[in-house]
Image (cartoon, rainbow, N blue to C red; front, side, top):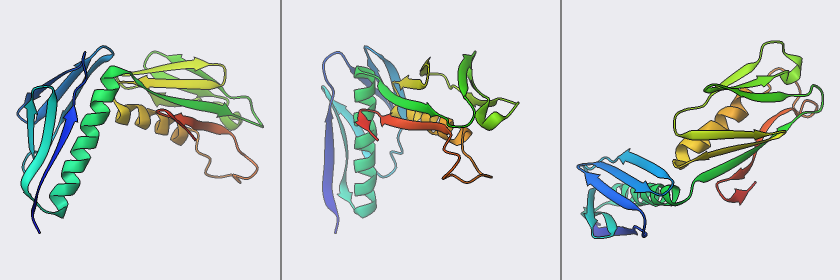
Length: 180
């Protein structure tokens, strides 16, 4: 059955939203974020200090698209208000791992005694801060910060050894406000 479904996302003071076709740009005190939305099946409009996502005759698929788009817009508005922060911990029991930033790359040295350091690229819009064994990743874009944190975990993934014994690696401890 087709229903009329609309979701309103309120934009707080100090945050500006600009809609240009299907491109939504959000600016705030912490930075700027933009995203393209597929507007074939859903409508995206700006009314005053609200962004409205919806469809007059929405099926189950359109309802999913509307709710996903609303969640993405909420994350964009939250991110430009205050940045998303991920914390990772460097854990080792066999070989002491050292992590350092070199330009737009992070080098993970001496992982499992390897001579060649493992590398992870830091994309534009993400800030990485290293304090001894704690790595902080901050960004306006929640998806980008989460992807960089996942790249750190993937870079130190152990494939050829027993995980019960070799528990070395870099692991996510805090995800954008919630502890793991």
